[in-house]
Image (cartoon, rainbow, N blue to C red; front, side, top):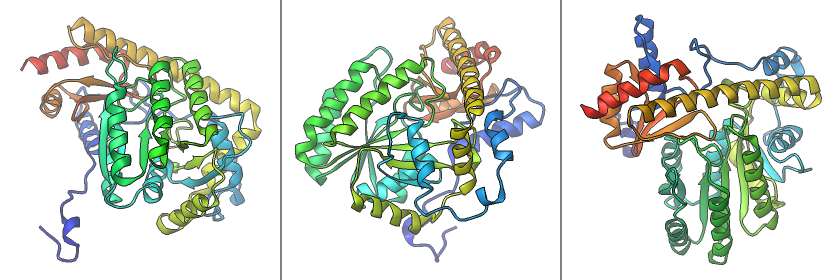
Length: 405
């Protein structure tokens, strides 16, 4: 039923989110006593399906005093928090540059759209991508274009990426590229060093055509197979950021790193920028959308920076769960190949992607087998964050059956 009170363009939505809808359906089936594999959720679960919460973080949360929770935070966020969050990624930096606190990484992405593009202009990102990217674009009147994320064993298609970037620059005079690397959601892989360097050089080469903004979407870096590859990637991004020809920013979040999903703590930072006009624009966007962010998670991060014991405990928790995620991803990859299916290699994060045809039909058939995944245009997103090792053979067998149907 249409609402006369809505403008016509706002009558076209159903108000649901695919990921949360599928997760709810899986939980409802499990509550009826069915044996369900729920690989939809984007939160870390133990082998009993319980939410993992890092005790090192919650211990500090319980120590917070009223002044660390109740007062308004500054509209742009506590500067000490912004620096501490930036230094989690680039410890050598002594400034976060230009930045604002946001409600999670999603808030950072939204603020970037409001300030880097005009309504009707085009955003570029790699496909497959996190589904809400489209929602964010639509809500800001932006059109989203995609370029192919390299398939396993293939090189980045630099020609396609350059063509897309150059076309956008020549059409609208500016480029905003959202890059979810390393630990890409949903593939679970990262760009190779060679691919990353080729991409960054291509962006350098295009700056004479107009302002180029590279926004790095980070969420899962603490859960990688090899932290050395994460560090190497961050150093590459720091190098191009320090050149200041390409504006390099980052969408940062405590949701996964601190298992504080519901606290909605994040930031949008441009660590190598000193542009006061940029800072004023971001601050205005904060005030005009969500105003202030929650103070409590900022206080938790600041306590963490002063507590070496808590830092060591958190590092141990990250190592433990990175190891478990590696075991889960490897078990799934082995099971898929044992069934004669496409491999799903994993470098880090909470997901892997299984590329296949008719993903929505396959996902629906999987539900009949008690297996829940998130379909997307290119295939299936599988949450190894909730898939225990012992479920891998059943998952792969069910998938093979559904593909043969």
